[in-house]
Image (tube, rainbow, N blue to C red; front, side, top):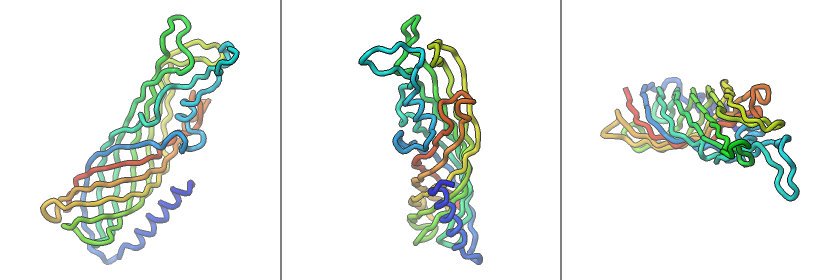
Length: 254
């Protein structure tokens, strides 16, 4: 288990244990949206397919030109293009004034159009286009700790959580055979469930009392899934879905 995921799990368990068993339990729901920023290329997991797509492999069928870079099947895109909006919902259980346990899910999908950097269609000279698509459905359990205040007050908080991300990663469009340089249409897809750990911090603002509130929350999420690698048509065997989230949500106590 990665160190960040272990740390999130320990913090999550510790905060649950800290909740007093006799505290009054208050239920609430929240729903909202936000934005996801993926980790940069220089910080991604070893074996990440997006990093390998960016770097490419040598095109063995390409002619060698003296004093010229060796052609590859690298794609042209920026990792920041995988940033995406998302929406989510969460059911919460508040234990007294200081501890809240939340169970939530969300959804995001982003499609990034790309072209090959070093090679074009040798018959027409046209760029060779394909798309990279990442869809994520996280299911999480989090604990928030409110150091002071209560419902009806402005409350900063910190927390941690664990969960699973159901993902679907696909590459579709036109591809280049590295040996023959022939172009062929295809689609490659990987789906699975990746364990995730997260840390969070935010602030909650009451709206006219202690029933409604608005939250602004930042999260750092760690999640790495499997693609199946070469056997499944991908250049590498991992898909790193780690990154930062900024969420805004509307909160209702009942």
